[in-house]
Amino acid sequence: MLLGSVEAGGTKFVCAVGDENYKVIDQETFPSKNPKETLQRTVDFFKRFPELDAIGIAAFGPVEVRLNHPDYGVITKKTPKVAWRGINIVDKIKNEINVPIFLTSDVNGSAYGEYVSAKSHDEDVESVVYYTVGTGVGAGIVIDGHFIGALGLQEMGHVKVKRHPADLAFKGICPHHGDCLEGLASGPTFDARLGKNGKEVPITDPTWDIMAYYLAQAAVQTTLTVRPNKIVFGGGVMSPEFLNMIREHFADELNGYVDVLPLEEYITMPEIENNGSATLGDFSLAKKVVKVGEGHAFAIDR
Image 1 (cartoon, rainbow, N blue to C red):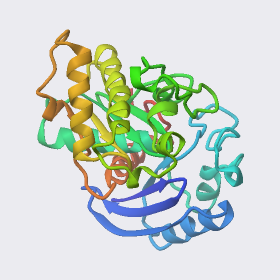
Image 2: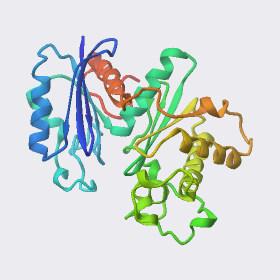
Image 3: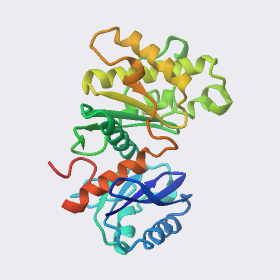
């Protein structure tokens, strides 16, 4: 069995082919330039594997993932990537590589990869929540091998959080909600607050602690609603030091109200190195649709 993966990011596409054990056989990375060129390179990559059985796509967005929706596969008009608005990323691939496709969001793909990885060494793992913190903030939830939702993808980066006392003057950068989680804790908020990239800001700067305070609240909300086995924080903003700040605020905010695993096990960075979570997730989701045909972001085998 040959499985395909498309990690369709706003900056780059990572295309891969793997076997039924999810071992990467070949992989190619290229920039997300204009849609026509990028999707043609994607098709050309998979044409090298005529025995391909299925493809999993984890795409930036917002992307329409409902199979019964007329815009299924379309990058919606709300995407900040103007050139990609209205582009159907499934049609181009499907028209030239006629195999079943599973489409989901980029963060859902990573969430599924982390779920598969955790399940591989602990069969008792039933649920994983994955937050990505970078240009924006997004999250995916996997419960018993399924995504959740009915009308669309989760937008957990846009929940409201309690303001940090030292951050009350900052209005937030989300164009829709101002001071939602993404508006207060995504990477670009460093530029908005300090006038420089987060990579230039030492971990001792109080801005890091302020952002950890917000992300910890998100982890508390997730704990009290989903009660997952683990919460994973990934994305370009994350580091072990920053993660420890989140754990400390989480412990303060939760205040022992419900039982969780030791925080070193419960709130973690990705198990899969080099941003490989989405590729593993895509492979696994592609394997699912080999048996049932097309699949979408929620559940295909219930």
